[in-house]
Image (cartoon, rainbow, N blue to C red; front, top):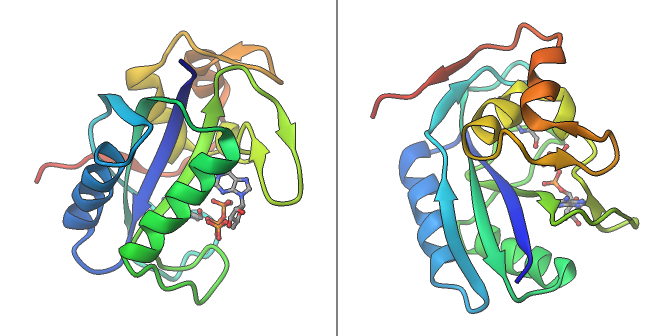
Length: 162
Ligand SMILES: Nc1ncnc2c1ncn2[C@@H]1O[C@H](COP(=O)(O)OP(=O)(O)OP(=O)(O)O)[C@@H](O)[C@H]1O
Ligand SMILES: Nc1nc2c(c(=O)[nH]1)N=C(CO)CN2
């Protein structure tokens, strides 16, 4: 069955609880099994800076859903957690991105896989390296561990102690 990696982030409300709820909803969704979960990291906002710090994590799932069905499932979970989308790159109760889906490459207006920003973001690569250091980015042909080594940002990413 296909394996996919998801990135989860929250910087509004009870951030830890938002991540836990999202995990619970993913686990209980038909056609999705959560296999690996990274640690939770507290991360400096990237993009729009004037917002609270995020909690971020990544998960590995196996799924019988297609990438589009998975996106619909994720959108449904985001709605359920009442994500408020006010600003692009702005605060959100929960954001779930599809980072990788096997070694699939998709470039459609509604869905891009691998996620086009993933390799530029320490808040994605640090938790992803924890669960998938040897997984290869299908466009850049580099391992996640290598992408993180080559990343030149000074975004702060720290382990979150709850
Ligand atoms: N790999 C992907 N994972 C999740 N959504 C995606 C992906 N590729 C495209 N999208 C589309 O992006 C739309 C907008 O996403 P969203 O508002 O979460 O962007 P963002 O989180 O503000 O920014 P970013 O995508 O850079 O993290 C989603 O509704 C979805 O249709
Ligand atoms: N630290 C951090 N910064 C962000 C995040 C995020 O999840 N974590 N998500 C964004 C839009 O998807 C924009 N900026």
